[in-house]
Amino acid sequence: FIDENTLPEYIIAEGHCHDLIILAYALSQFSYIARCLGIFGDEIKYKKESDRLSEIVNRTLISDKKPSFNNDFSLYSMVAVHPFRLAGMTDANIRFLIDGLLKNRNELPVFMRPIGWDVFLSLLIANNLMLIGDPAGVLMIQKLLNAAGDRYSLPDYINPSTGRGVWGRGESKIASALVFSTIRNMIFIDHPERLELFPTSNQSWFEPGREIVVENAPSRFGMICFRMISLTNEIQIQFEKLPKFVPPDIMINMPVKAKILPGDDFIMKKEGERSQVINGWPSVVRFIRK
Image (cartoon, rainbow, N blue to C red; front, side, top):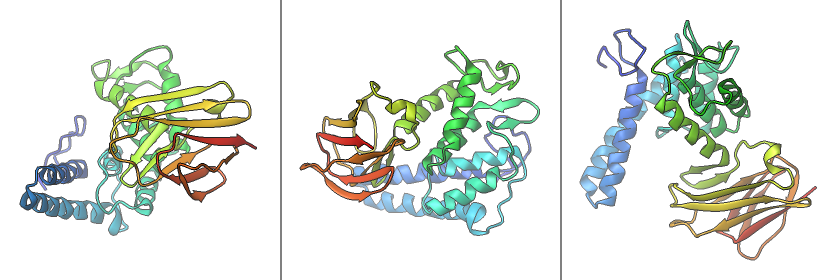
C-alpha cells in the first residue's frame, strides 16, 4: 500500500484502510454497472478484484481479531459498514468493528484532539450504530443538532462548549449531505433483501396526531412512498405507489407497544414485541395500541 492517503487532516505519510475500502466498493459498483450493460466478462473481473480487496480489509479489521485502532483517524475505517458496506461484513463483524473502534472512547460525539467535535465522523458513527439498531446513534445525533441550535448548517468541527465552528471552511457540504442521509436512515433503510421502516425511531414520532410522509425517496427498490398516521387507538402505515421492485421483506419497527392486524394483501412472516416482518406491498398496515 502506498505511503500516502486521501484523508484531509491525516498528514502522516502512510496508507489508510479508508482508501482501500472506497476502492473495493467502487469496483463492486463497476461490476454491477457491467452486469446491467450485459458486459459479463467485465462484471466477473471487477467483482473478483473487489472481493480480493474486501478480503484484505476484512482480514485487517476483523479476521485477525487484532485490529490496530491506535489513533482518532482509525474511525474512518467505519465506512466499510456505512456507506460503503463491503462483502463479508456480517452483523457480527459490524458489531466487533464498532466495539473495537469505540472501545477507548468515553464520550460521543467524536472529539478530535485538539480541534473539537468532528461532525462528519460523528454522523458516520451514528449511522453505523443505527444500522445495527443501537439507540446510541440517535442520542449522538440529537446532541449534535442541539449544539447547532437554530442554524441551518454545520461546520466541519464544533467547539463542544460554545457550539461554534472551530476548523474548516465554515459550512460543510459533506456534513450537510450526511445529515440528510442520517434523517433518511432514521425513517427507513434499504438493505439488499429488506426494507426496514423506523429502525431507531423514538416514541415522540408516534404520539397521537403525528404524521410522517415519505414521497419518492430513492432506494435500491425504486422510489419509495409511504405515510405513517398516528391516531389515538391505532397507528397506520399506508403504502403508496408500488416501487419498481417489491422488497423481499418489509420490517416495521414500533417504539411503542402495538399489535399488528392481519391483512388480505400481505403475509405475516415474523412478529416480535416491537418488530414485525411482512411480505408484499399492502395498501395499509394497521397497528392497535396496547
